[in-house]
Length: 394
Image (cartoon, rainbow, N blue to C red; front, side, top):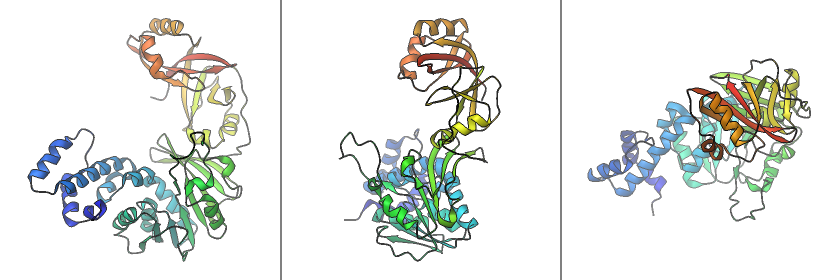
């Protein structure tokens, strides 16, 4: 039986996909499907094309205008590297004079395309046959790129360097108590990946939540934030790496900021001051917030809670700043009265270390008024506290 991917790769399907264009959430999909079927198109083909058109619209966030030239699977799009991040990966290889890379577990070929675009010869390996077929389509315009449908472990390496984007295995059948990801929970197994990295210059893309204890000490690790989203931790090995270095990388509004520090350094805990600062997640997850705080004269509001404070405002792309106008106990009646007195009708609610959710709290506050504020909920000296603040980032 012909697979859905095989049907998608036909001239009729690709032509119809171009005609339909990307479909956003406001599109009347039912009406479109009815129209296309009445025009004589095969019902299954119509469904396949419409699903792909919706994926193309979702892909705009990662690939911009290039999404209209690519094909996706649901899982492939979810795991695919964002275009600006893939470009950074590729640049690291080119800066190291690497001329050939094997992308082991290439998915829909997001990183492989970035490598090829910089003139690096790419062998893209993908075990899933449907995903491999889409990777071949996406790499079709690059003569120095080829796709192999096979497992990473079975691949014969003929390139100078390697790149991995290991997928998480299906853990749904495991015990509900299984919360910590281990090397064998990935495909390919990370133990094998790290062994390969001893033989070749290697890059490994992982979830930013990846356990620090599993990161090889000799590798370079970079936690990457893109326009407010923490997207990955990137490990470099061999000649691609600065051995043992740990850094946070922030890509924001076309600019690039990097903070290199010692993750063993902790920030001091002190009383709340005039300003509260919310660090970027790359600083938090990389465990580099301590040294950042010390360098900038900031202190923690509470141990293990990522809110910083100072009497003077600092200007930094790494933090969002809030001016404190009132500190209160986290008591609904007291908060409601204080917000009403300030005529706060528009309220941004942020919280760390508190089990109360903004969705639970908001209706209880009965907000009404012409003014706007930010409410920060956290703990101070082990006691729940609330800070009414002005958002200085708008």
